[in-house]
Amino acid sequence: MNYYFSKTVKGTFEEVIDKVTKGLKEEGFGILTEIDIKETLKKKLNVDFKNYTILGACNPPFAHKALVAEDKIGTMLPCNVIVQEIEPGVMEVAAVNPMASMQAVENEELHEIASQITALLEAIIAKL
Image (cartoon, rainbow, N blue to C red; front, side):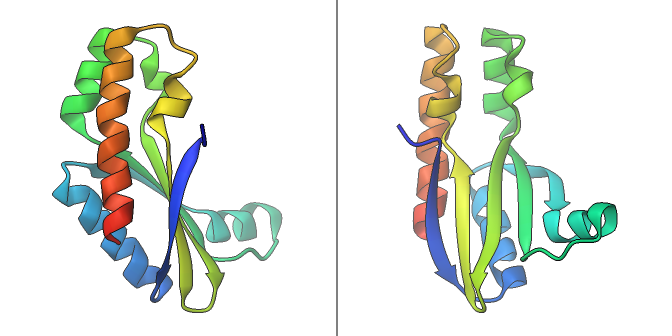
């Protein structure tokens, strides 16, 4: 089982981040964190890196269900979605596969929640 799923999308970096954010919102996800890796690496290490942003996505109803089912599951939240520039005008969007990350947790209720979140994230990526 892959720990992520992805799709290549054409457009500018900013356009693709906007599309991803809107797609997530349509399925009930909000963005809790947005980490600009290019900017962070330049600032902290003075190295140049490609356009690469990590979006920390959260679907509050599912997050609540997961936390009730397994109180330490917050260590694996939020669901990260990345947008990275592969070449000018070509971006890769990848999302964590919640089923892969939850494999180590022995909790059937949590596995069902992870399955539902996986389906939502796969659909969002597919629609891009």
